[in-house]
Image (cartoon, rainbow, N blue to C red; front, side):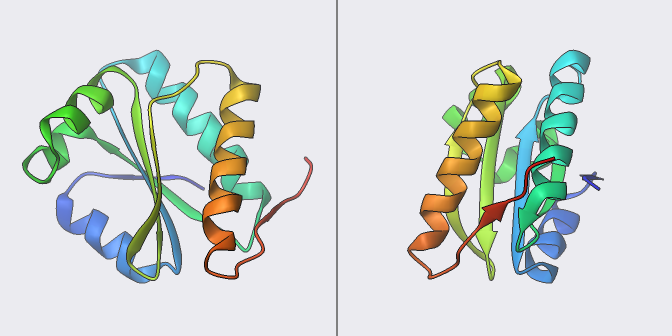
Length: 126
């Protein structure tokens, strides 16, 4: 289940607590986008082997730690980061806007990034 985080300290704790932690920074005020991202992340989280724990955060919560271009991306779309043992190993700026294409792109990107760390990521069919 995707968690919504309200404070920067919660984001840091999520990254520290989970071996594979996904953080998606987006705009909560854009309800359609927020719902789309929640649905996408729930599908990825439920099918990932080993499990990725995803969390969603409103971009204003992390505004002090983001670069200006990251704020713009998160305000309009989404900034997706995957952490392995506390280190960012994958980042995607923006979404394609198609559920199938976004899911395929994220699965491929995550899988390829984790190969470098000898992690064989699988996504089971739903």
